Length: 193
Image (cartoon, rainbow, N blue to C red):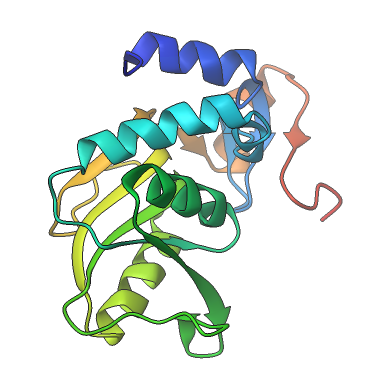
């Protein structure tokens, strides 16, 4: 049984995926909210439930393969593909953009669902879509666990964000959180940068 939006938010808060405070983002901007995306992947039952919602949503879309960008999309692509009984494939960074390496490939016309963990600008998703199209495969849909983009994405195919939260960002010079004296925190893969 799928979770409703409040139940999803409760999972994200309880697992400390959705953090409330004052955060320095990779972009250099500040935000009140931060998504510590890998924390949801620490709990297989939660990520399995989210992947199940994606699999259910796209069950009649004729999907043959589920593709995800490295790193966050690997686990999600694998689990969605497992639940759909389909193939999973992973788009890695190459000098030419993302590509399918390690013997992974798509055939012309193969029907692909692209998945990822968190989408802000859509960069990883777009790069994965480009890799799918370069292979001549057919994009059938896009799904993410968390859509924190500032405007609704249009990939030209059905899109599913399990949880959506528009996250307002601020330039450091105009940040109301700085003006309130709230301490600034930096999270992510390298908090020392």
